[in-house]
Structures are given as C-alpha cells and as structure tokens.
Image (cartoon, rainbow, N blue to C red):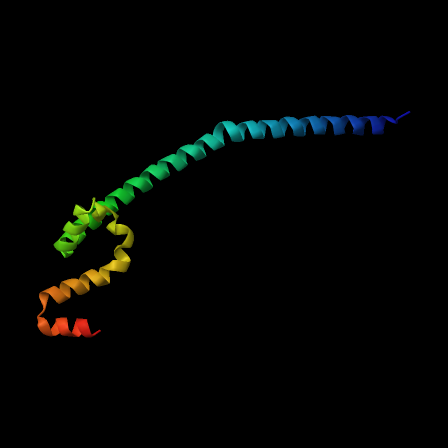
Length: 117
C-alpha cells in the first residue's frame, strides 16, 4: 500500500505530465496558426520587393548603358532585350565598356597602344 505522500507525488506527476502535454499542444497550435502564416506572408512580401528592386535596377542600368555606349546598348537591345540583363554583369564589364569609349574618342595613336596590349 502506498503512503499518502507517494500517492500525492504520483498524482502530481500525472498532473504535471497532463499539463505539459496540454501546454506543448497549445504551443504547437499557436506556432502553426499564428507564427508560420506570418513568416510566409513576410517572406512573400520580401520576395516581391526583391523582384521589384531587381527590375528597377535592370531598367536604370540599361539607361546608364545607353548613355555610356549607345552602340553596345543597341546591339544588346536588338538581340532580344539583353540590355535588361546587363545589370548582372555590369561590374565586370564596365571597365571594358569604358575602354571601348576611350578608344573610340581618341585618335589612332591610342588604337595602336590598345592593339599592342
């Protein structure tokens, strides 16, 4: 036979276990009903803003290329609006575009130097 203290401890243990199960279930329910939808909505809004920012950057980079070198711009534009993708490689290609502009604006001596190197 169990002593009253043991019976009380066993009852508290069962109550604690039931409380933990209910508490965990409530946390899981809260997580899936409140937190996950907010995270998904936030990720969707962030994704839309990122796409919009990329589109804006591609348009303005295309305008910059048109002002910097109209010949390259029209070649890319004529090849299927590739000027809109120029922003992806702008950082790498900008020195070459500037070199082409420099060569076009200066005389034959510069052309000889560029041909040599």
